[in-house]
Image (tube, rainbow, N blue to C red; front, side, top):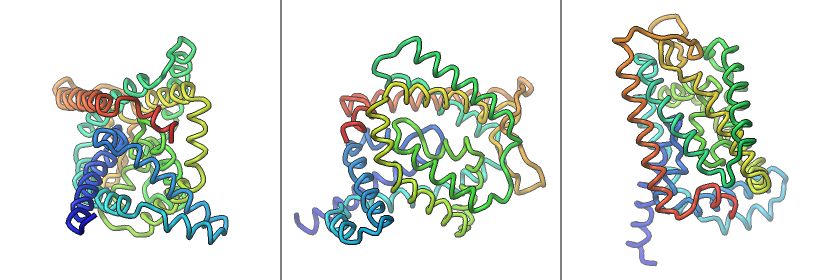
Length: 317
């Protein structure tokens, strides 16, 4: 390939990364959906598993194996993609951080619509729907809804250990079809802290999140693939239940997304249930409908583009 052709590929991959990063920073929108739309989902999964193989070899002290894997790694695809993702996350973090603090109810309405539509998308991935799977999803959703009501909202000054654990869970979720890593961070109550860490360049917090993500990627990527392959529909049913239950975190009226206000010493608890005055309902509701419509349209486009669901592609890889 000529130098011009290689340069064009780098630009294309970086642009794809920008689009994926913009999706990943918003709870309820999976970067995998964008990757499927762009026609790189299978290649992305292959690259992720190759990277996990390198990390696994390094953690086990298999230096020669790690070196051979590194030599065959698809750097020309992975590096521009990662750079694009990072640039998008950093660019959007400031905007989202401000909105989470100043307009928590409005942002919760937006996220509510995104995740609610993701429930529909995830259920469509179930290959053989049944009453038993539906009851499983509802039971998991109800239990999770109740458990989330026990928390008192996000914790100020998240510890590095908590962020490390959140990184492990979030990256594992990102390997599953239809789940956004940002959604997992929001569900765990660390999403505002993670966004603030990116926006304010809190390197200790960012290092803890990144280290957790790297460890989770190395340890669990192959395990998750095997679980999806062996128990595909039950796994998706549980995932649908988690999405349903998590809507309590996003209940936009009146508590909004749980945040620690930077302008006042207060916590806005995203698990409280209630209704705001009717005059305050229209904007969160409008954004919820618009966001849900966007996810459903993107899902339909991805299905046409890929010719099969993301779950099927993940199992083949």
